[in-house]
Length: 114
Image (cartoon, rainbow, N blue to C red; front, side, top):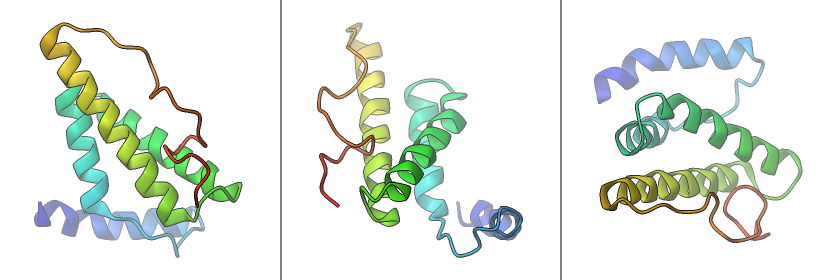
């Protein structure tokens, strides 16, 4: 996947600059890995939707002071990974589950810890 990351790096740098968030670290390997899990566990269009929602949740948690940006991103990514994998398991076994993880939190999978 190094080839894809090398090709994406200049685009990501340009996009971050255009959005005026140049100092935002982007872990391409983690984002692409999560997108892959979502695409293969649910359906391909789940990849961009999942990464958008994770970014939004992490940004919201960071902006409201619920967690540091890196912590918020890891927590939101972990929750999304769990949901996608659970979805794949439920599809494989024919089970249905409720939406959500059943715990109150800050939208990042954390329960108030920063």
